[in-house]
Image (cartoon, rainbow over all chains, first blue to last red; front, top):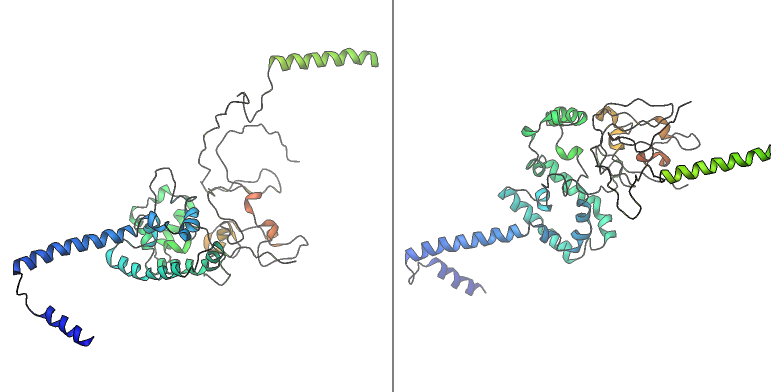
Length: 206
Length: 142
């Protein structure tokens, strides 16, 4: 094992005796382009809606909920697909998110949320992951489309103006603080579970 | 007396029949479109969204909602209305707080949360549409 490694190491270290420097440079360059293009195409494929809804977990649980919301269907037909909100657009952070998301492959293999009941049971935890992520990156994915500087407050309702011109303008709050549950339905949040959200209704057992 | 009633009744019936013949029965909601044909429903407009509180039309009227409530989630898990209108939230949201009567159960006992019988806001409170009423209303508050 160690001997084999040593042999490969000497092959890699030794200057090439058969190929010209020109071939190695140009070949490396072309090979690099092909590899990079292939890598990015493959990664972009994992950003498509077809990929996300390829598994029944996503197709039957969060995706139908999105279909009722304004982020899926609206008057002008501009819509958000899964990755628009769940994957950062910038390369470095996108890579970090993709590496993090490899845990979801584990979840898929072991059926962590393979029934609606399991999904509902785990839902609050999964939602918290996303809320924490949005909170940490100042709602980056919202702001990819909803640019604060381009917001015309005069076109907003009075209460939206009031909120946006105070809490959002002062950066005291970020989008996700108020706009939770806009693309999916909210799970039951226990009274102490979140600083600002209204818990649902506990039906008294009498 | 009874003899006089019969021709009067007959005349009334004849008049009603003539009226029915002259003017076919029209359902105010449906309009004159024949039953087998599909009606042309009025265009959907945007609900009123101006946030101006509308005064009550009569005592005990549930106040109407002066903003859009499209897609508001109201279920066991979450109540979008109470996210602003719950009494604990109105300091921040500046919304109209839910009446304290909504925090009482049937027996008048005060609860920590909105009473389950008051939980489904849109059963009584409704968003407004700038539409002409299809059916007239002559309700007079006492």
